[in-house]
Image 1 (cartoon, rainbow, N blue to C red):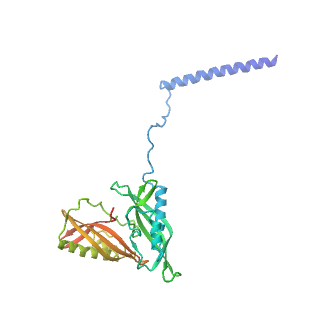
Image 2 (tube, one colour):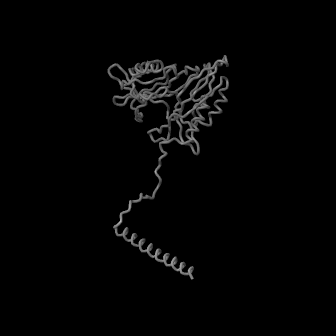
Image 3 (cartoon, helix red, strand yellow):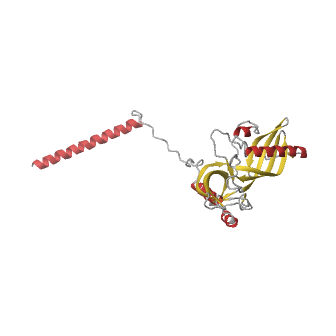
Length: 303
């Protein structure tokens, strides 16, 4: 008799507990519905495309392609120029120099890259899709006449690349630059004006040629304060001192538009570490103040 009584009490307790829970739940729901009980707002979920947070971050494929190219570009052996050209042809856009501007006829050192790292990747502001990849490379040079003699040379190389299908191509001749310095302003300046203006007369062209040769001699041998003497803004800038030597300047063309002169030229430089010569195409914006000439913008490459 005792067990049925206990069972009935338990069932009665559970029944009233369930009834009380239901009543309380309903009361709370209605109180929230009518605003009598405040609840913290939940974060809104907005439908739509995800925000692109990787646009400024380099992709792994850009880094891998650039580092692979730099290793091949900085690898040369005297007398094996053809095999080097064969290795590099997979990277170039059509009609680029197969040696990437390098001439090994007077080079006294062979080269290979021991360590290669991407320093920075910058989109060009002209919406061309070209990215300038700055690469740091620790290279080892070996004396052609004495293979046991080696030396280490640290280089910074700018490689212009562009997306091509599932990979990339190098769209212009790479060029060496001075090590990046935080306190030095970017020398590249604004983009050149596509409307170059009218060709100057022979007298002005000769003046510009004399100025340009003086500029290149100082740019490859002078201190930042000496280079500042040639710049319109008067700011010290790192040149190629200790990195490249000036050999020759050719194919100079000078145009004038208003008070600005636009000059294009081919410049031959010599890599001081290896003796190899490099042929680059440069363009400048110049201004004349009295009988003095100044560089207001300097750019490298034909693209």
